[in-house]
Amino acid sequence: MPRIPRWLKVWLVPIWNRTHRVVGRTRQFATAILQGRCEWCSACGRFGPMLYQARVVPPRLAELWGLTPQRTKALARRESCNCAWCGAKLRARRIARVLLDTYPVGDSLERAPSVAAWVRRPEFRRLRVAEFNVIEGLHDVLLALPGLAYSEYQEGVEPGSMVDQVRCENLTRLTYPDESFDLVLTSETLEHVPDLDAALREIRRILVPGGRHIFTVPVLPGVPKTYARADLMPDGTIVARGPMIHHPGGDHGYPVFTEFGADLPDLLKKAGFETTVSWGDSTEEDLAQVFISRKPDGASIATAGLTHSRPLG
Ligand SMILES: [Zn+2]
Image (cartoon, rainbow, N blue to C red; front, side):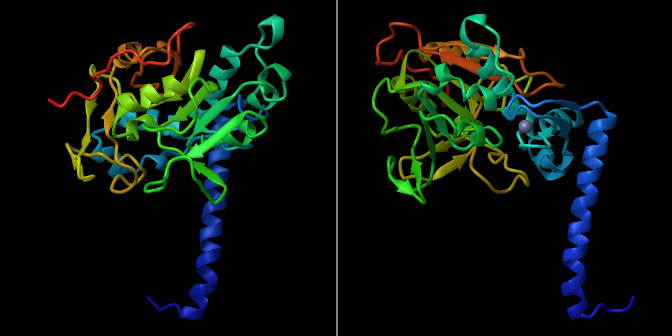
């Protein structure tokens, strides 16, 4: 086979990559339309195809985590089926649905058609909302809320400080005052926190009585009890108990400290929340549940006892 000159490669590679992307995107659109995956987006409010991407769960990740083909597809649906307009993946759009159901519009108890419309309603513009780590697809519409406090975790950065105009917070030692938020939002965050008890205690502390924490975490079916995948040692080192990264690729990303099981609602109850789950238990077909934890009316700032959520045995 003749060698392709270097100067020609410089021209051909970008063209090849762009063509590959266009073909892939066209295939996603066509598949979504043919399979009837077109709907109104609960985040941006626009109608369009929801684009499934199998590659968000690469074979290496499925192998490391022991995922069956059925679970791999369910996980790929949860992490893709992106709105063609705003990019909100299924789990972000489900959080959006829960927001609309949990905070109905006015006296009519109807829900707004989308979070993009919801954030324009005066009754919700008064809500004080803490979003920890960006919820892709939903973050951009939430920015319209005057009371949005958005922060990101950055390793080694003092909580409460700003980096590139973004506030940094650590869920285990938040710098927000007691009872300063009506709503806390997290998505795929709690599993990465080394001290889950401390994070739940802090979330409860910053919520007003009656305030809610709406969130997603990965919960695989058939895991009855929450357990630790890794431990943070007093000297700061992380000791893994098995595969502990779930970033695409499987070998890099943020460590996963907690594998959540079917007992999660009980753990949240012990941490002082009333919790409901949308879309039922996790199943082989549906892994995109949303948890709604409510701090009871009249609850004190002090947390209920430890959750014992990460047994050391
Ligand atoms: Zn959308």
